[in-house]
Amino acid sequence: MKGAVKLRVVRRTVAQPDTELSDLHPVLGRVYAARGVRSAVELDTSLERLLPVGTLAGIPEAVELLLRHRTGRVLIIGDFDADGATSSALMVRGLAAAGFSAPDFLVPNRFQFGYGLTPEIVALAATRDPTLIVTVDNGISSNAGVAAARALGIEVLITDHHLPGAQLPDASVIVNPNLVGSTFGSRALAGVGVAFYLMAALRRSLDALQLTPPGAPGVADLLDLVALGTVADVVALDANNRVLVSQGLKRIRAGRCVAGIRALLDIAGRPVADLAASDLAFGVAPRLNAAGRIDDMSIGIQCLLADDPATAARLALRLDELNQERRSIEAKMQQEALAAVRGLADPAPGARHRNGVCLFDPGWHQGVVGLVASRVKDRLRRPVVAFASADETTLRGSARSVAGIHIRDVFDSMAARDPDLISRFGGHAMAAGLTLERAQLDRFARAFDEEVGRWMAHAPAADVVETDGELAPEEIALDTAQALRGGGPWGQAFPEPTFDGVFGIRSARVIGERHLKMWVEVPASGRSFDAIAFNHIEPGAQFTPPAGLTQLVYRLEVNEYQGERRLQLLIEHLLPLAR
Image (cartoon, rainbow, N blue to C red; front, top):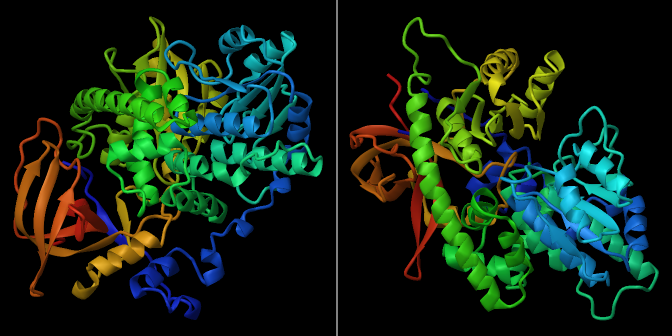
């Protein structure tokens, strides 16, 4: 079951909410205060609160470069995840609205080309005769690919948000808030956020030059794509990203979104009028990501570029089918992975403790190993790398990490100690990808375990679950759930409100093979609640119904059923009572 590592609850420190927050629902005020919000100004998500476009380094030069190619052939090369798909669609739509002649896109097939602007993808791009290649959500580590493009006489504009390596590619212009020396006020922009800033600056320049095509849609029309890509990439929702996501959600709720997003929401059964960031994260993003994991992300980009609702619906249906296939593949791989690590959560006396865990199975699917790494990481509460075969001699891995252990920097330190170990790597603090020679796997696993051990000495305790404390029985109510839902967007670094408390389990049953449906009550209060714990049951595991009093870590959810809104507790952890 979930939570194999013995977890302990730590409640966030809650200062007395500022008087400026006193008009809010009292639970929401406490939640904001626990996240460091001290004034109503900090909750302002109007567009006026966005960091100025011109403060992102490289933007003026990038706009100048784009304008030189306005009548040329601009080719967008994106990544094969949801951030890359939304970035690609945003750039194509933005350039078309700016009067560029037929901007096109190309996304590498992960199984054929791997990640980024490789020399192989440049050779394929060259068959379309581009005058300018623009990367979105990739490129900052594509030194060889940029060199190959320049050798063919093709200029390259890199827009990316991933961390740069020691040597930057020799591109014409690079726009990346994470470049060394960057003074931009947010390093948390997703790839789609960087693309949006560039399109906003381009539009401003065209307006000043009186070159904007008559009737061209405003750049704010692209914010639905920005919201989706930002939420899907799980970047930190700092103040700037909260503005971008909030504004995008408002447009989607008002029905002013691309047909593809609407079609994906419909097929996921997510109501548009009351949309929250979590609906994008759990309803839309997995279906969009499934294209890049199982087939070809071009399907997802075409869905986001479709203006005809019928075309968008057909493509969304295909994405849904791919997502079902992905879930089936993932379930089998997850069962195999969890069986392999069953003894690591609670090792036998004398067994060697592993700080960082490496997993490989020759039958695993390359596009799904990242999800498996994430599931095992959640179970073991330590960094995990899962590998699949790329070819007979090469492995491709996907890593997921925990708070306080910067996984990309872990790989960087390993590469500095042993330059021949890792063929290629890149990523973020919490997620990264790498390529490895199969013969190096055992050596890598030992080095990874050692390096993670060095980081763990300074990382937060892995067995901690943070909550916003206990709710009074009367606060566990629909109006509280609605206030919290409306208080978002919630996400990475601005976590969705989570509470803990002692409940009695009145009934429990398994639904859909993996989910635990319960009826729980607050002792001695006379109040009981509908509750569900998704994916609580491991595949193939024997189910023992919980009984008696249990500590629950949960969120308040507004559950819409047959037109009626009801309160539901979304259970994240069931923990035994401390004795």
